[in-house]
Every structure is written in C-alpha cells, then in structure tokens.
Image (cartoon, rainbow, N blue to C red; front, top):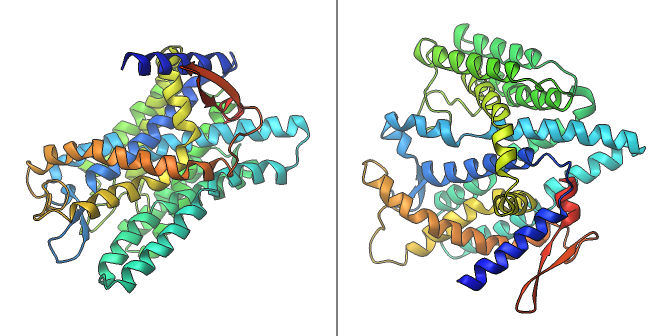
Length: 400
C-alpha cells in the first residue's frame, strides 16, 4: 500500500508539473463534478427490477417523492453546458487567432466528442442481437438498449451547440430563456401541443451555454453577477415549484405527468441558472483546491476520459445487475423495487461495485476516446517507481 501511494504521489506531481501555470484548473474541476453528478445520479435514481418477469426500469422518486431534493444535487447538466460554452468560445477565439479554419476547429472538437460513441453502438448492437437470438424477451432488450442510448441525446444537443458556437457565442442568455418561457406558457397555460416542448431541448441548454460564452469574455470577473444568478435562479425555481405547478424533481420520474428534463422546462432552466451561479462562485475555492497535486491529478485524469465514463456508466450498472441475476434470489438494492427506505442504503452499497465495473469498461474502451493512439504526440513519460512507467497525456491536459 505504501508503494502504491508513493507511485500515485509521483504520478500526481508529474501531472501537476506538466500543466501550464496559466491553466484555469477550476474549469476542469467543474467539468469533472458535472460528469460525476450525472453518473451518480443515474446510478441512484435508476433501478432495474425483476418485478414484471424481465428487467424493467423504475425510480425511487416514483415511490418516495420527498426524495426529490436528491435530484437537485445530481442533475448537473447545466454546469456541463456552462463549461462547454466557456471552453468552446475560448477555443474558437484561439483558433481564429492562429488562423485555423472553422472546419478544422469544429472537426477536432466533434471528433473527440463522437469518437468513443462508435464503440458503444457496435458493442450494444452485438449484445442486443445476441440477447434476442438467445430468447431474451423484447421488452427487456428494449429497456437495456434505451438506458444505453438515452444519454446520447445530450451529446447530440451539445454537438449542435458546439458547431453553432460562432453564431451563438455572443447571444444574450435572456433570448433563449424567453423562448423557454414562451413555450411553457403555450404548453401549460394555453393548452398548446406537447410537441412544442421539444423546442426547449435546444433553447433550454442554450441558456447555460451562452452564459459560459459570456464567462469567456469576462462577464463574471466580479462576484456580483454570479450571486445574482444564484439568487434569482433559486427564487424562480422555488416559485415555479410552489405556485407554478412544476414538479420538484429535476429529473424525469416514471409515471409523472410532467418531466422537468425531457424536454427541459422553465423550472429546470431556472434551476440551471442557480447551479451556474453557484459554480461561478466556487471558482476561487476550486482553484485553490486544484493547487494540490493529488486533487488536480484526479480531476485531470477524469477529464481525459470524460466521454468514456459518461458513455459506459450505464453499461457498468447493467452488467452488475445482469450478473446479479445468477444469485438464487433478487438482491436488495439491485433487483428489488425501490419502494422503501431500506432500498437506499442497499443501493449505496452497490455503488463501489458499479464503479469497479466502470473501471473495467474504462480500461477496455478508453483508447477509443484517444483515437486509438497508444501514445499521443506530446505525451510525457513519468517514472512511478520500481522501474515502471505511467503515461500522463500532457497535450490533452493542456488543450482540453
């Protein structure tokens, strides 16, 4: 154990030394927390049960509505779009200064985004076909495939906004916010068609994305605007939940008449504004924390595999759930219906198992996020003891 700690310490110090002094590490920390929030949120509020014979999905929020505040902690997509807008706007500005074309810039960003998706799609095409050929019932296969594919909507929206960065980078966030409010008024106040809500898929996430672009231009150099975002967003969210009829949960709940997330509602966007305000206020504490080599190394390494973690975390959970079916009885917190408080501590005990399965997926598929290159240009070798070496991808850390 002492040798492992020594190796990790040396690796962390190497990554810290290889990071440019001017890098804003708080940005990477916010992105890492956003990814972890999504992963842990899915693991906690998505339950695969055997109650109906096959595997079907449900949520503890459908049985214990007072747990809705849990979704406030783990629904962190607004922060991811905030950071995405910030990084994309700065990256595009830098590309223009270097004389790079739009095609070169957007191709590089979208390639990193979608490269690992192919591995997920190929594997699950084979797995789904194998399950159907093996006699697994269609509803079970549909449930599993839907869990794998459902996160991809986020990538599509993020890709569209990234490609549109030159057009939307200077758009004021109030414009997409007004669209969200207008669409909700039409849907809920004037009995408009439900399909109108899908306009909010773009408009809703454009709000934090344009906030991130404004951040890149120095709009939040002082704490005042961030405090205003936090206060106004929190007050608006509370008002919309208490008096506007919006659900308290910030994620979808099976069987609920209205979902705040699918498509995004005004309540979800207001909540996202509060999250963005809090994230911007935490920049300085996070920057101080990231000066510690150990903390920074964890964040840097997670950022290098962010898409792999995001794409495979549902597969990790489903693999553990499927292997658990080999047990003679349903395992608490894994296959049982989440209709009691006992399910929660049981589920928490499964989180390290999910994490171990995700680590195996990461080891198997992280190469696809790096374009299949075993050693990218700009990689530095760091000696970690006993003659063994670890690779710290300096180029990626520098330009993520």
